[in-house]
Length: 399
Image (cartoon, rainbow, N blue to C red; front, side, top):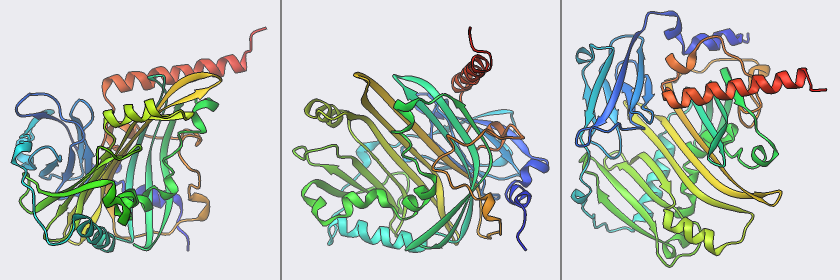
């Protein structure tokens, strides 16, 4: 018998109905006292996930007391005892890594060959089936001004195996705030929710450098990883003379378990500028970033969070427009058990942009695992008022 969607809403979210332990963590750099963003925070006992925002802030809401693990690729990992988090706001300092401590590793096999093995092993070890509770958070800019925002609590049920992944999406709550016109919405909907998990779990963003011809375009190296002696990092950098909009890649991996822990890429500003000046296309990229963080614990190996940013210039009606999209996904909880649901409950759209707003709690503050900064909240509020004005004008057109 097919269970109703109400079961889904309770499947991960006992936190909504039970007493929770709430407090704020502010993560700062030990040397500079500046906030550190994109720190992955995991409650060790409950496996709840969080991510710090631009102000280094994370609102923690636990189902039971738990020590917290803080991880960032540029800082040394630490575990903070729950007993020390006894204030409403708790400041935690991370010790930065000194890049000069990295050492090159000489290997018998080419680093690309080692990377291929890592990808295959990671794909085979990734936990499937699994149900991920995800908070999605997206901002859209036009000409450096935010014009649209959407977020939501989503459940990804991942079935199949590493060679044939099937993902069903069930949306619990969501917001869509702002206005997208034709010059934006037909060009930036690149984050297709129906294949994004497949891309991440099959490491498809690395296909570019796994091709045998990539050795002629990129320099591959393996180096030590100072925060963790069990980890190494593969760095893949395009040769200076290589043509095109090519990314710098890094892959942090566990050298004993042969599992990828973090993978990311970005295009340097110098290469983007060269590309911009040498090309006469109608769409010119000026920003391109990507990062996936994975976590391995016991028999579980799963995506912890992701970030993607794309910015480009596009000519529209003989005017140049700067368009940028930033997407964060935070896995706030997961369960290896799967559940049944009706086909009508499955979200089949490409993104949440066109889905009607529907929420019954302030999930963006308590359940999101990734809170907006005060500045972002002010922008969201302004966008919300803007929608109201437009609707009023449509309902009461000027004579």
